[in-house]
Length: 62
Image (cartoon, rainbow, N blue to C red):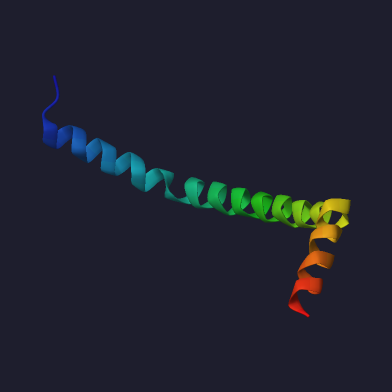
């Protein structure tokens, strides 16, 4: 049986070890998300519904 202090020390040690791996993962995930969003925006702009929406917005702005 471990004391709470030992467990907390183990957790802190583990988190310190994981920092570089976690930062690498977060950066990679962020880049993937950015690419996905860029593609989604392009796809949306190509869609007929989006063009229709933009035309209506422009007409209302006049």
